[in-house]
Length: 394
Image (cartoon, rainbow, N blue to C red; front, side, top):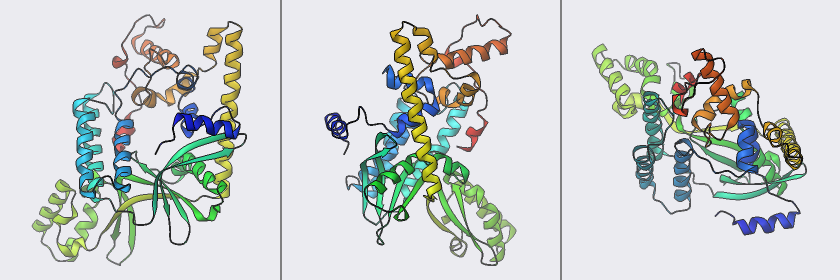
């Protein structure tokens, strides 16, 4: 259950702080400084509500919450996802990619299959689990609050902080660079008296499955495979086993074709199916002291930057320097370029409100059209955003 606004106010008073920060506030600074100004200082309502990412993520979290709080039966989860998807994608016509219908549909087809398959096959967590656990934590001189998607207590007294994730998978350095929120919640548990060695942090990537494959020598390897590509990714290994069990070339072709078409291992002979294991895709990051120190410093430094800019902003406004105050939150062109996908397809503020992004788009358009002075005007939907190739991996 979410904590009420009034209870949060009382908590602030008890902690003697002017506000309870959140990971979203910290992360917003690194997504877009100007978005931070619009959202947290000016409190301007977002003017774009056609992005589907937050909605489908919210639908998925809601289904998992209702299932683990015994409000929704297991065999109803996929149906609930279908209903939510229809409302968001088919009726409301929310977008994965704005202004590119073909790419938008391609991503949607894969995304729908992946999540629908997850809700049909999810491995139920049988250990004690708390859902949407509210936590507070002090980092430096600031207090933070948040909700843990799932907090699992194991028989040995250890805990796993788990986040349901509908994005592309994080691995290696990418995982370490994205685990700030989980680490913050790990610090929160530690401040409640739980030793770090008894705290694990992890994501369950809903779009993926962990598939254990075998070689002829019996060597097993775990692969993280996007659910919609299972039939494609297992072709070589399945072909090897079909040959090993003596199937003809024609039979092998038919089995591989069926596997590619259905993404379902059940179309294969039983002896081949037995060579594979399928599990939900959990990715863990070791909660080392080095990681804790890194994210602690990151959060402290970010909040100092925020507080300093907020103070400067108020001083400039008080002096009547409104344009200079606004410019304080502008990022350079290169920084905006790096965030162009986010600003184009996920950010809730259009270029009409997000001035640095508008300036970037105008400059980009001027270069492409030889309009050095930038006098031509275009609507947001007409802008061509570069560097979207990685979307094929979603």
